[in-house]
Every structure is written in C-alpha cells, then in structure tokens.
Amino acid sequence: MLVTMKRKVFDSLDHAALEWTCVEPTLQRLHSGRDPTVKSQVLAQLTNGQKAQFLFRVLYHHTGNSVVDFYCWVSYLLTEARTWSGIKGGLRYFGDDAMLRLLEETESFLEAKNRLGDAEWRDVFPQDLDDDAELLASVSRLNATFHEIAPATLKLIGTYIRDNPGEFVRIDD
View 1 (cartoon, rainbow, N blue to C red):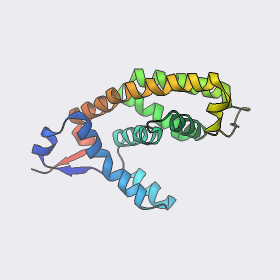
View 2: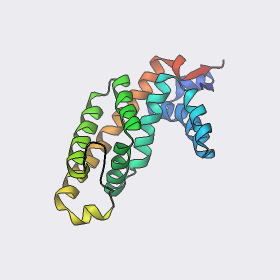
View 3: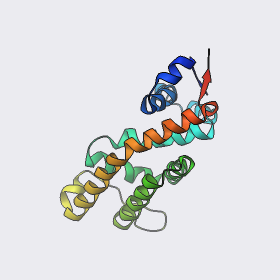
View 4: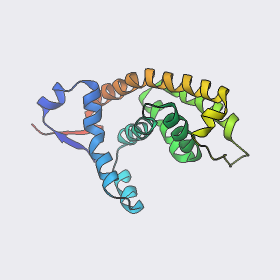
C-alpha cells in the first residue's frame, strides 16, 4: 500500500513530515473500519518497512504526553506479545538501538512489577502510579526518555524512507 506523491513533494518534506505522510493513510484506513478482517487486509498490504513504521506509530501515538498514557499503553502492548515483538523488530529494522534499549529496559521493569506468571499479567490502572512511588518515579523517567528519543526515531524512519522510497512511496512525476 504505497503512498503516491509527486517527486517535488517527496523532495520538499523534512524527515518527520515525510514519515507522517507515509503512515497517515494506513492509520486512517485502520481507524475508519473496526472490522478485524479489514484490519488484517490492510496490514497484509504493507511492506516490511511500512509495518515497522506503523507499529512504532501505534506505540508513539498511544503513549501521548502523559506518564499515565505511557504506563497504561506500554503495559497493554506488553500483553500483546506479537505486537510488542513487532514494535521491537521494527526498531531493529530501522537500526534504532537507542529506542530499542529503552523499550527493553521498560519491558524488564514493567515485567518485574506486573507479570504474575509465565503468560499472565496483572491488570494495570492509572491509580497504580499514585499508589506506588517507585513505580511513578521509574515510569516518569522512562516516559521522559521515550519522549526525548522519539524525535530521533521519527527522523531515522524518515531518513530510511528517503533512502528507500520504493518501500513506502510511488513517485508520480
């Protein structure tokens, strides 16, 4: 599912704008239909690069700007092993070692706090952060670091798109 754009537009966008322009149509298609079959069909049309980009966007979009969003969404995504693995695989795909290390640190910390057994996770709630000062301090630090690193990740993805346009864009001169 390549995005079609004019060469002039492709060349004029900065890395972050290029990254957003390439992922926005996928996000719109997925948000417009809640049918799991439609979602599967849309995701099946994506190239490996688009899947990697999309999965990071899922994480980035849902973590928002609050510690609560970061805690709840990362905790949720950790329970979705396939999605979490895909996010980390996407970071490897783009060569983003800094974000990958942070997510692995976050995973280890939240696993120690919230994993009940081999396959079971404790339900998490925003109130957890109010009830546990260590949790709040650690998640606040991880959230701040995530938001410090994320612009570099988006730039890295934009650079990858610019260097590998055939995975993302159909140039229409």
